[in-house]
Length: 518
Image (cartoon, rainbow, N blue to C red; front, side, top):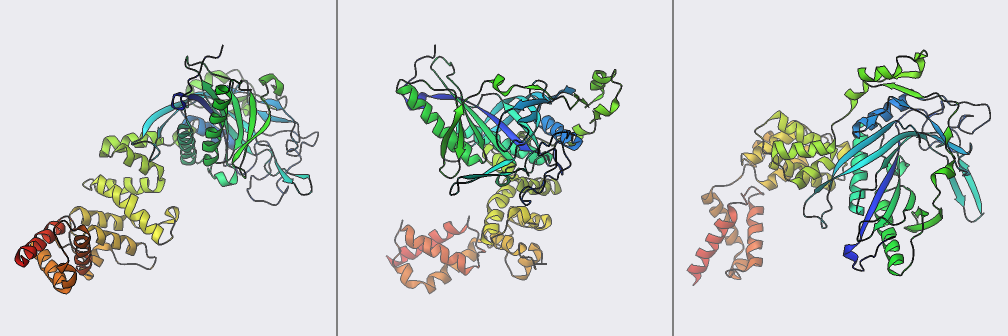
């Protein structure tokens, strides 16, 4: 019996499971020679097999298998040496065969785990770490697209996408909220992009997510599960979970019973739309695919034993080279940054979230181990990103010199230049026509920092002489006048004043002036 629920919203808990469908970066489709090409003219990349013309047979794309295995290993899964294909029957207008070729009974891989960090500024003070178990990963073909013309009450079918190579990553329902779901999707996306097995372009439909949600009672018993199909964005997943949790809680608190239903996510209305009652597994009438033999893989020497009695060696794929292509996981990178460089959890999280900045960071510190990791992080995460934003430049297309960045970091670390001069130098090295190094610019434009208190005092006195009306209004603890004078002194020195020393010098000069005035 489903137990009693607390009426306090903060005490609700949910069990959320994701099924992530990732399109593999193959040149052709999973079972045909048609090109896998986004944006092609309607129905222009369709073979007879894709259109389910009788008499056509599937031919397995070996590259798709290789990419799927790399993905599975990158997601810490056990790759099965033998897997098989099944037909999953359902009837949509954009599924011409009336079934999808997938792997239900013997999937490509099983028992994986993704460790990831959950962090949302404003919600969490710092990242916390979570893991989600993977039940299985299966190779399968995609369906086509249905395009609706509501004015004419017509539906158009585009089969360009039909048969494209997918992996479906089925996670256990071990997430508790929308922040964790969002973080897991981002982690999987990063892993697949690092592995170069999925481009991760959500706007092109390369990643689509099904979300399963149940509410827990006070005894940790799960209620009926609902499913949200084909959500095409992380933003959509977050809002879909929030809405569905609220809907289920309202039903239960009102004395009703949550039904086992399937919803679609309406991108335009930003809301859920009921599709149908949730099918049971046997509604799909899974049967073995008769036109494809079992998929036999050799990943290492130990898996050879599974295939020693097979006469037809053409049915065996030797993928012993694949493990060397598996990249480092983002979570390992975070732990590495924390342990080796002493970065905070937040700093490590932010760096790993920006792949190119992480690459810059690693190169800068490997080039010179004496460089301060914190100064390097702050320059990349704030100075460089802000400069790119000012110049309307994209980080992915930024080819700034690592040597030039290193020079700026070294001068900041050795207090040769001020922070503001560092900002100026970043702007300069981003100019396409710039051929002068930061060190040369500092010498040529006389940009070295002024840290000597006597020099700074002279600058303060000169500014005060020029700003007599403003100085006359100054009183102790008058922050507005003080800050204005501070700004003018910095401006007078062409941003060369050491802002760690200047405030104390200016305070002393102003206090002397006040005492003399009294």
